[in-house]
Length: 215
Ligand code: G3P
Image (tube, rainbow, N blue to C red; front, side, top):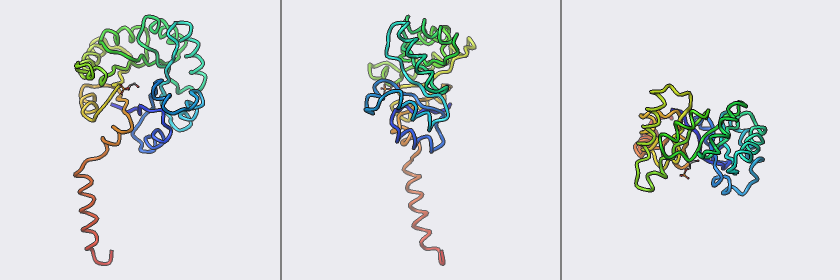
């Protein structure tokens, strides 16, 4: 499993990229809105830092509108992956964009069959939202498991991104299930890289080092 950073914040993106563990970035309209920056210039800035897929979402809900936004986004940088909401119009748009070789990430996936439809329409990636299912009392990881099983059984050429990740357990289980990617907020990325025993171990080594003569 590879990692994407789920953020539109340049400081977080730069720090995560420099850590060497992320393969790309995913954004959504809510994350972009938090930054108070214009969308296309922000994507250009991200593309200067990140050498990997950068998901950017369309706002239109109609087929023609989605296509024209998608083509404009794809013009920004070849690394842009167009995020399309999981709707009938969205599937139509995915099919056309696949024919144009514009990569897509079908977002807001909440059932295994939505994911299968997206894959059949030609999506490059699908994004099942784990945390939002947990929020309504369902089990997000079960959705991920079902999607990975269906994609393996039918040898589908569509990559699965575990999205709406809220904690390190989501990440651990997504890796065990076989998700291709987990897109994680920066706060979770920091949690993943630390452990109290690592911190205590460093402290003890440094304290002991002070006792070394002539150090
Ligand atoms: O970017 C899509 C997804 O990761 C959103 O997560 O936490 O808003 O449900 P969240």
